[in-house]
Length: 350
Image (cartoon, rainbow, N blue to C red; front, side, top):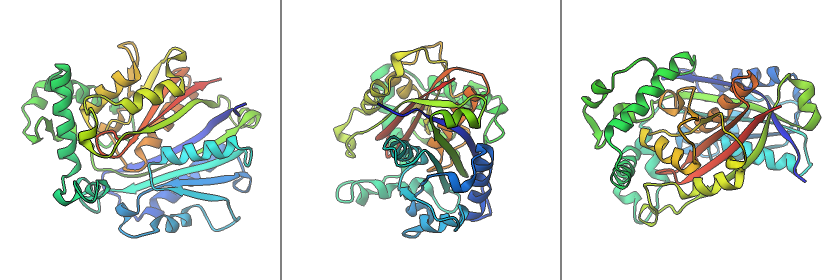
């Protein structure tokens, strides 16, 4: 029988260019999440983080980030070289085993120090793709073109996603891009990689996120409305782009079914779609109809702290439910080129 696990606190920070190092901007976020959980630090049973050594420019760089957690008391700790959403998945599994009853999850990334789109080429196949060094934006453009041709959608549909995201992001203090924009003006902008323009791409963002999850009745003791993780699954597709239908996300479709997305009404969804066309692909894969609000926070087109953005989607959804602005939501995270890996999390309020 599965154990009930709830999100009891969440914190984040974002900046288009943070002059502090990773430990300096991560530490206050971790402290805020722990303080909001009202659970003594020594009673948190497990700690798991998500980050990228490539992004930090040195191997085992994640070890240095432990300075933000503190050296005392000793902790059970783990790390995934993935977005923090996958660190949350590991923590959820750890709680399911019964070894611990609570966990601190955190993630961070500083993208402004280099050219993120160029750096991400390092995650490609080292024999057939990496020697060509295609940047992430160019690969996303290939996917966008495949999507438009397969579905009959247009660049105007992509611009509509951008306009709605920026409008919704106005109320989000963590958005680095927001405001009212005219679709005609967006379509008049030059291409970065056809059919994608600058506003179709994720904004460079430095930032961190942290979350505390607790099992069972203890969660109800700690907060007025714990947000329960009712379904959790992640799937991966082949790395070779020629082996996949880029116009859809088969792994998201499977993860959605396994996580139970369709077992009840969905009030809203927070989708980790760094590129505008990917929101439309994910919406179809998750079977979300027109009545479902998508990315009320503004989503990844408004703020994209790499390696933390997926956990932010889950945290944003949890905070919205905890505040009573919805009862059941779907949160999604992605990793890898062109939506290669996808994680789906179903959340419900008490």
